[in-house]
Length: 255
Image (cartoon, rainbow, N blue to C red):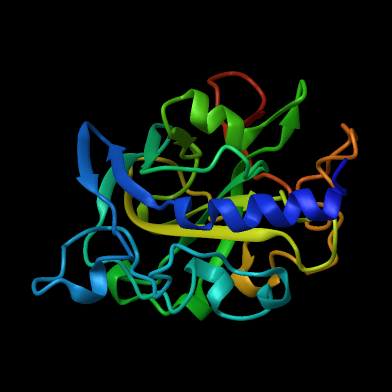
């Protein structure tokens, strides 16, 4: 019999080379390439993509003790994507990962932050994120397992009431295979520039990326091998969009 700590360490060591990134982004009938941080530094011609660049050439993670640092916002050393992809409010953005290790179980969270102008010139520290979706542990299955079942595709619905404009989508997997101990969880944030059309007039209040989590949040320290089923997803509550109906009261719809 091996200890839980040994098994967690073994999983982390054997899967380190399999960490992924968002390789495709689909919205508004168009599919574009994401950004591969492993090859980006060596490309003679830098790709034009809404995906933000980052310096994690090892496809590594951001540790919980860095949740107050700029690297947690859009990954290590992240800089804005050089284009945007258009999507109508109320419609879906689909991101496709190139790979993901089946051992890296955990929740998936999605956020939006409105840019003050062109997101290709955004300052990440100025972005204020509000959560638009989250999935954790349900029926004994983690969100990351559902990602694998869906051929590495993940859908994110843009709230139908948000004001049109330029936004950064922050899509994130939190791997918990080593999270039974402090600073063992692994954050994998991915940022994408969106141009949201249509919509309403809502401008939800957000928080800085460096204020989304702390290293000691209950959902950041969690032993997935314990058999517990009462997992609390870290971060702020999911934003509830309001939809106006004629001759009816406002109704709140959770996307």
